[in-house]
Image (cartoon, rainbow, N blue to C red; front, side):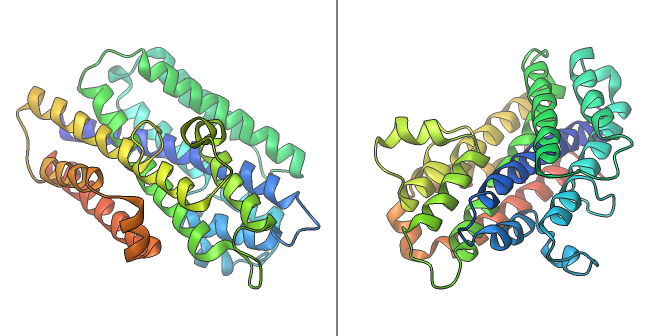
Length: 311
């Protein structure tokens, strides 16, 4: 497989995953914002921007502070590299360049999602925005389903590895922003607003039911963190994403005869997570732990690019 083909497949996986996550984030934030008169709205939208690392860029726009403008910026802004439109543009461009490596169903899922945003200049009101995010989620789920029916070859593993790297980054940022920044000043930890925000986090990663199955307890922040960091049976957890990356690298390395620094970093992270407890994470500081994880995830991403000569 050519290096540029591998790079396009990998980044296609990352961009589709990012588009889906951003759609989920917008939907969850809209629902949290609707819980007025509880004072969560502005903080919720600010946190959504921070999760996708777009806070500084949006602060410089003329409509900073307008919740509907935030939704539009996260959905349609061409100058926001993390907007759903920008992600689907990039995913489609990458898919076009490797069209022969994809099934028809995979290509059509990406193309339908891209077509759904073509020509839109505004997300409209809350109901229209929710409908738009529902459409994006449906198409990205269609992409995931089509991907699962692909031949288990190098193309499948590069796409899936990109998605797993992106998923780990998204989940870590989501937990960090909620725990470290989101609760309004003066509000009680464990209070109504705190509980609503943690519920929103679970909704963003489709984990409300999973939480009840795993813990059979009322919502507790440290248990949410435990599930989203350390529980490998939770598909969007850091542990699950790490295991996926190790598995994909092992397959690709065996088929292409190319192993190296990326394999070492991925296996080291897997071993470290397996030996970590939620008590030790909170002991060193959850924010500090997640900051390190995000940096290491970026380092692993660079190692993958170098190992398979993406550039």
